Amino acid sequence: MTHHEIAKQIEAADEKIILIYAFNAIGKTRLSVIYKDATKDGDGAHAGVYYNAYSEDIFVWDNGDENEDGEIRLHVRQSSLSRFHSLFNEESMRKKLKPYRPKYDFEFTLHKDVEKGIEFITFFPTDADPKELKYIKISRGEERVFVWCFFLALFDVEGWADKQSAHFFIDDPVSSLDDHNIFVTATTLFDLIQNHFEKRRIIITTHHIGLISILADWLTKGEKADKFKKQTKLYLLSNKSGELTLEREKNDVFLYHLRVLQVLEQAQKENNVKSFHFALLRQAIENVSSFLGVGRPSYVLGQIGIEDPNEINNIINTLTHKNVYYYESDELVPDSKRIFDDVFNGLKEKYKFVLHA
Image (cartoon, rainbow, N blue to C red; front, side):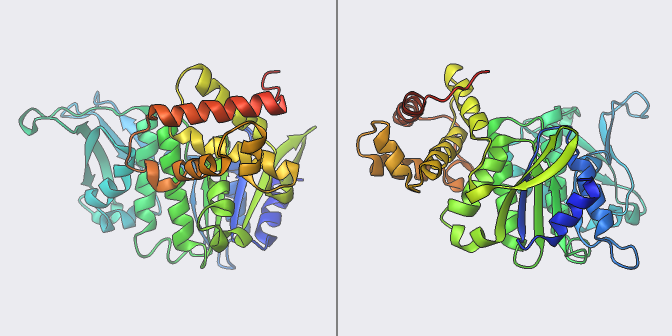
């Protein structure tokens, strides 16, 4: 299949929430562009709004060598979105950024002609003395988070997303992020889905196993799954012998479960298990349960030797609730770490997974 054919397949899908997992270099960004072109109306206007690698290209660093004041700035290239910049401010951005726990603050500088939008953004440490303010360059990961939150704030502005209201197409907002930020990004996407899926289609593509697993879990098995499950479909975008395919997941079982287990094993070996990893552990247990045809994670826990499997299953479910980590520490208390080790080691011993080629 071509990217054009895949775009048409997505457009024809019955579901309102489309999750697509693909390895890097498959062509996710290209797919988002082709989908944009394929869904334009008769006058050539965009039907939906997008976030992809081109969204990030709007932001360009100037390290200060050519500025009169020599300050480091993140310039914002003019685009069709510039006229909306004046309709949101630093405070709305700070609300979007807060769950990511930024260690910096920032300031927008608008063009004199406000229709041209934001000219540049400057950053400074949160504990900086205003009298001795020194602007800084934030890291690549921090920049990715900032740009994502910039677009989240922009989605709320009247005149753009509410006018181009057929769909959101979000392509891989999680590269260069650590585990906590990946989990928070999953919550921002879940909130976006919850607020908009009844009136528009939400398409999310990613190469990140954790992000796709967490979203799939919340949407199809979480406490609000009854609201979302029938409207959610998981796809795999892959390249088989030079031929692109977009395959629906059978029985909603995520076929890349071994990759989930590899991520968990690496975290365990490095003694770096965080709250985030319980969401992946739950995904692995549910995949085994589905494979066995029982549909009960507590059954799997009993099979691997866990005492009081119903209670441990309830604890794991609690630890994977999205609000547990939203503003809390990523670190596990000793009892939670012990549960993780007992369950994960039991899975490996009972089902003999081969996690290394």
